[in-house]
Image (cartoon, rainbow, N blue to C red):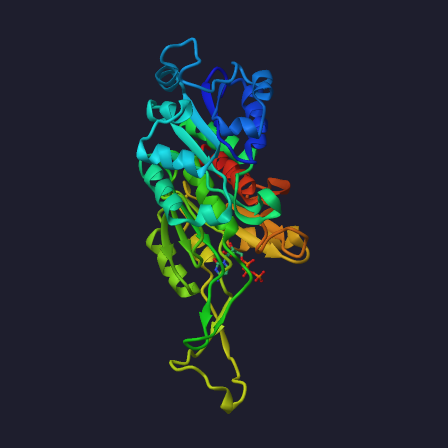
Length: 394
Ligand code: CTP
C-alpha cells in the first residue's frame, strides 16, 4: 500500500526528533519514497547524515539552497502525503496561520495532499489554549492530528505532550493513504467507568479511566470511520470524533440505543453492574450514622445489543477479569451474543485500568482467538479494529 508513495517527512526541533528516524526507516522498509525536510532547529537534535543515510532522497533544509528553484511547491505538489513528526508549537502555529517561514511550513501551505501532524512538546505548552486552538483549526481543515501521549519528556519531566509511538504514526499514514478500511462505516465506542449516584455528592464507581475507549475512537477515525464516542470522562480527542457525555449506566444505555444502528459498536466502557436502589436527593449527613446501601442491577447494555444484533453489524465487548481470563471471556461471548470479546487480565502489571498499555486476547464468536502482547492502547485499538474490518468484509 505504501510502495512507491511519495511521503515528505517533516522533522522539527524537539527531543522526539530521534523517533522520526525510526518512522523514516519503517516507511522506507514498507516501500515508500521518503523525502525528509528538516527545520534548522531539528538539525540540533538529529544530524542530517542520519536521514541522508536512511531516506530515499537527501535531506532538504532550505528553500534557497536547493537545485530546484521552487522546492516548496514541487514537494507539496508531488507528495502523496506529508507527515510532520515531531511537530513543535512553532510549526503548528505557523501552519495554522498560513505562515510559510521555512521550507517545511512553505511545503505544508503549498500542498493538497493529506497532512499528518504529530505534536510533541512540554505539558504546559501542549495544554496551552493557543496550541489546542491551532490543532483544532487544523483538524477542522482536514489535517490528521495524531495527539501527543503521556510519558517521559525532555529534562526528566513526565506528563502529556510526548510524541505518539512511531508505530501509531505509521498506521495513521497507511490508513490515510488507503482511504481507510472503515471509510463510510459508523462506529460507536463507549469509554470510561459509569458513576451511579448515592446522593448529589457521592457515587459508586470503578477504576476505568477511559483511555482504551478513546484510543479505539481515534484509531477508528484514522481508518476513515464516522465515529461517536459515548464517554463518562473528558480526555483529549481529535475534533472529528463526536463526543456524547454521560454519567450513569442508565444514561449510557439510552445514548447507545439512540445509535444502535451503527455498523460497529465497541463497548469499552466499564458499565456498573449495580447501582444504589434509592438515590437521596439531599446529601446524606453523617450524624445519622453510615447508611445501608441497597443495590439493584443495571441493565446489561452489551447483552441488549447482542439480542437486537443485525447480521451485518459487528458488536465488540470487553471482559476485564482477574482470574480464568479465557474461560470467563468465552462465556461472555456466548451469553451476550456478541461477535468479539477483548479480554484483559486487569490484575497483571501495566494492563487495563489507568495504564498507557494493555495486553489482551481477542476472542471471536467463530472460535478464533488471538493473543496481543503488551503494547500501547492505540496499538491494541488497531488490533481490535483489524478483527472488526475482517468481519465486516465477510
Ligand atoms: N457491560 C454492559 N452493561 C453492563 C455491564 C457490562 O454493556 N451493565 C459490558 C461492558 O461494557 C463490557 C462487557 O459488558 O463490554 C463485559 O463487562 P463485565 O463487567 O466484564 O462483564 P459482566 O457481564 O458484568 O460479568 P461479570 O461482572 O460477572 O464479570
